[in-house]
Image (cartoon, rainbow, N blue to C red; front, side, top):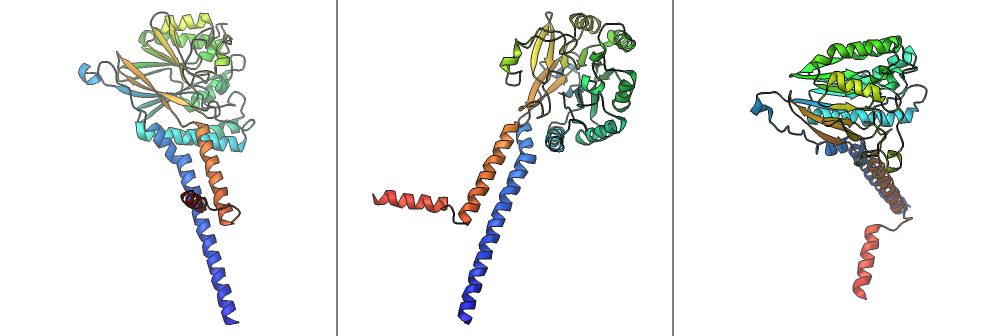
Length: 370
């Protein structure tokens, strides 16, 4: 009787040992996959990005180089259309991407080119405060890093939705500053939503501000792209899908009107224009010498392959490079493969599936004997 009990006890102990070992393997696999997909992948991808070099090094010309980061269309979800899982997933992605970029690349200034929020144009005071709090957590930054934000149509509404209250609410958080100068480089942040050209009070004020600072301008940053017929001439892996590139743009909705675009070029005479709004990349040359770069969305909610622009700038030269973030489908595929491995491990442990190693060994022995 004692021997039977002893044998049963050993069997029970071995079973518990096997189960504990299985749980340990499953926990290690889950931990490794989560660590890779939620932390390490951002370092591995962004580590490959590097600041471009200007043609004339700043040290040779006696000028200081400014390192600027440009991103767009973060679209933080609100209380109406924001599902909690969507918020959690996409906002975590942006937080990890932004914080990793700050740590690895150490920019001096970051510009966000509009559509910070998804529902700013209609959000209540409390919803707005909640959205701002989440934004400040996601895009927190050291004091020595400047963060400059341009208003987009989702932040204050299109022309027919925009009013003084929404603009003041936005500027109370993000500053009403239009002209920003650093290291001899001038940046103008344009409220392009107000460039309707119909003489409205807000539009007149915006135009007057631009005329006032136009004498000091070197470069322009804004939300709406300048006028172009479509994205037909845009290319690259983060451009709009092929089937969408030929769709004509609607003036004052997708792009600025031709008249407003010409006014901006005349008033500001920029060396470079960067804009958001379309969620896709594009490079357009206005006239013979003014390039415009459309910056893709920074969020997985709008793109599978988000990115941002890195700019090395001096008062006379600039160089741009693009830095891609991890692809969303890469992360999802990694999780799917890991889930498959978990299922295989459980089935092998339950002896519902032969061990792959044992199966391979038996196959090899069979091959040798034939």
